[in-house]
Image (cartoon, rainbow, N blue to C red):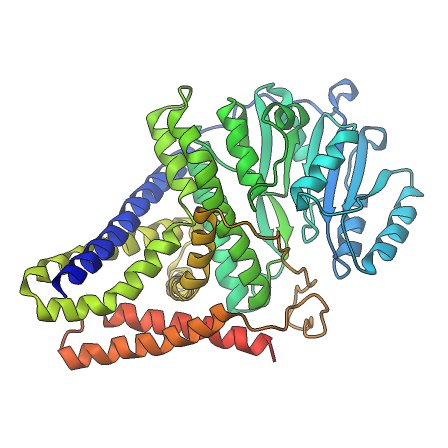
Length: 493
């Protein structure tokens, strides 16, 4: 029993300390972000008012069974303001459903107005999205490659805001900030927007302002074609091909430019099955990229120690869910160990590091929220509610995302499962008849139901042992897993 207690205590302690060090790195990004606000952008830029400085651009639109959003996508892209003779549009269509017919008709209609638009079809989905992008690149005419997923709605002047930065020949990527068409649709979309806003402000700016590695986010950005090829082209051995190519490019000393003030609206997953699918792919892909690229970062002689440190924490981002889940599950036996073995009582002092971690995240996310929504007492109260909701539900996703991380670290390969796009922007929009939604209940959902009972037992244990030091944590875990479980069951009715 004592030996098992030692194992539990060690794993519990490592989890808390890993989260603490991650929060310190995150807080450092906040300081970088705040300092960057004082800097004036002096980047080299093309003057696109001069015809001889306007480069050729290819827009790639990778789609797969997108019948609910393809019309919105193609209509939006057709309205992009750019000289037609210097613009090519590639619709990289791997669809296997009846959306192909609608897409083909829309492309034919758009071509009538003089746009160079091509419908590129493959006989199979080899390499999934990475494979489609690579295939399109073979025939792309553009020196620069803009990429948009099917749920994005770029502004008409988007190319005029991004392409100028490529005058610097070392710039390989220009990435823009994601906006959210349906931020206020539900609690689920609100917390997703909340988390993504932190990534697209504090994290991206915090890293980019100090020339640490950032990532192309898979969409709403532009690549220099030469950079893609020099970095080894798109590869499909991870589920996050965007993160992979980003690191390979920066290890080749290409620079990335992040534009916080250029916002590209997109649709957030509005239902939990779509969110689960996206979260699983992102977190498994992140773990796969850690396995693939961590050693390359550490061994690189061209980047500094601080950039390496931030690169490692960046690649370990999804692994934090493993730390959260480990800490959460072991916190229950820790209560009994504390009660049984007096020598372990001091270990509970480590809980202060989790409290500090939470405070650091609270401060960092407030800076993000304030930069987008403004300050003031009312907004701060709104922020507190949103932060607690986000923190609680994130814990509820910890088991689901831990499975994704473990699969990624173990090297278990799986299919690239797309996030269903539903064309949901307002409360009146419906999704229940959507043909892309899964109607099965996975074993993960069943385990999440068991975890609800487990954390009820945890709260009961607090009263049984007369030790309430972890009851707030266990209450949050109970609520978080209950939210995820109930929403997941509802979607499968």
